[in-house]
Picture 1 (cartoon, rainbow, N blue to C red):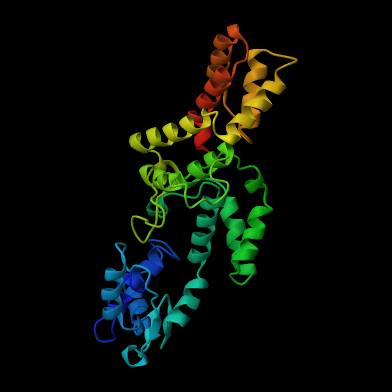
Picture 2: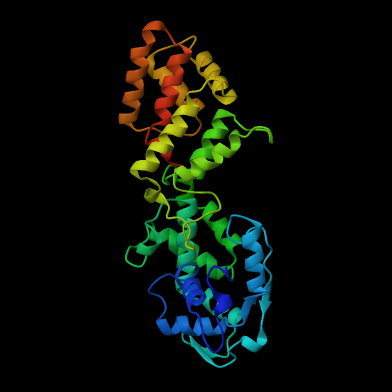
Length: 335
């Protein structure tokens, strides 16, 4: 992060505000909870935080790999002679703060508690609007954010304790299908159902093609678009990414050569042998897909497909077609 946000060029006689700005804006408090002077004072506090042999390591890293910084191990170095030891006015407090003291001050802010709480809610519970809109848009569930922020202070900023409150809460238990799956969740969730790549196999290069799929959907693994990361929720869905998401899931969920799919077909066939009607078939297909709810319009389409195909009995082809339609549904994109 020191390299990414240029703090190795942040010197006591010539500050670089980038690290100071982003630690406040993106990683702790959010826009609107600090001033430009706070940014400057924060940058002053982090002067001296650098890396060893920065220029040489950067040169070696670029030679080492096509990826920025390659496999080189960067080493943090604190340079006391480059640290601004003067008094600083930061978030209403004064003193000769260094980086660690600034972090402690940030952690004690109400804005930090609510910012962290909202991020946890967004990741584990339900989609919030993109982070840049948080300063103008209230939380989706203000009471939930209040509970998490209170737990943050009661536990002396212990995230494990905050998560315990979150996971035991009613709002978490009632949050099924309130998040748009990330591309990684789409791909991994689908592969878990299909039973592919269960055992590491260096000779099976297909896994490398699978790794590219998340990138086609907008989330190239280990390569976020910026230091902020990816915007989640509805922003995962674009006209292009939606086509990739649906095509990937539908193709793999309708391929009976995949071990997980062949097993699912057998389970559906067994479930409808003694009692069959289109509704029963649809219920059996949804059931083997795992925890999943579909609304009335999606269910009507599934029943219509099941009804049209039952003239020849319950065939593998019909079951696979229903799997494909389920994987193409709106509900499959949610978790």
